[in-house]
Image (cartoon, rainbow, N blue to C red; front, side, top):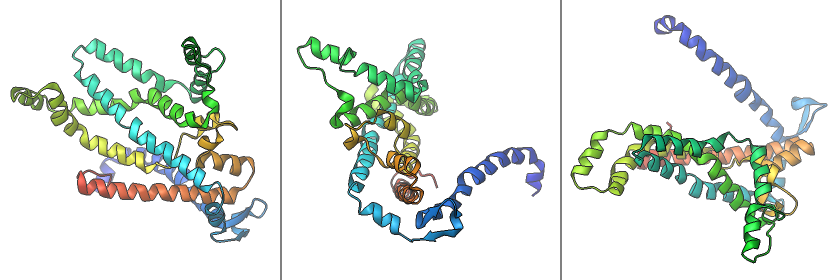
Amino acid sequence: MKAIGRRYDLYLMLLIPIVWYVVFQYGPMYGLQIAFKNFNPAKGILDSKWVGFEHFQRFFESYYFWRLLWNTVSINLFSLLFAFPIPIFLALLVNEIRNKAFSKMVQNITYIPHFISVVAMVGMLLLFLSPRGGPLNTLIQAFGGQPVRFLDLPGWFKTIFISSNIWQNMGWQSIIYIAALSGVNPQLYEAAKMDGASRLRRIWHVSLPGILPVIVILLILDVGHFMNVGFEKILLMQNNLNMESSDVISTFVYTTGILKGEFSYTAAIGMFNSVVNLMLLVLVNRFARKKAETSLW
């Protein structure tokens, strides 16, 4: 209490985010009970009829359950496999550039796309991939091919979504790795160089181990929202023709819960989604603590 009294100003500043979390993060958890009820807005949460796990059972037995689950899991899994390592490679590349002016230019060019809004990004995809005058289809036709309706084909949806995410976010996500690399002791590089290590060897044995704790922490955080997909972008890219590949849990919750008013049903789906995320976070954190000796807790 004496320590708090001496630095009361810092604790008063801490009070603001605590109140924000309590009001906007923990407070709404009271409404999770509608997942176990037939929620009627006229009756309110407490007076709505209790139905137990009926909504969960309905979702698990629905014909679209496996489609939604596969689309959600596959998009996140492929993003984790392909999108997660690229910022690390970019950071290592920038760190190896000796010309500082060129290094800054590469950083600026790669992280500027992060500031493009989701709506503008999808608009760019519509223009670039348009079968009528789009640059890519123009190139295909120049080589004698037929125009392809990329955004209407289910087989192309995930590729376009993940690759555009990589282009938009790799520069921004690499910043934290570049910052971590700046903290690696330069004497380690000099010692490796004197031992005859090539540049690739120095990257493998000095740079990567130096940022490994940061990589592990960010990987755990990514896995912690594994089941959450970019809702806005998918919704904007979605149409009736690519629904087979683009319909994920978050978009289904929006269209069914918000637009159709099935609040209890979609609350149950959202709870299932969150429980899976929590389980994955705990398991990956435990694995990282045992294997890499780095974890969130």
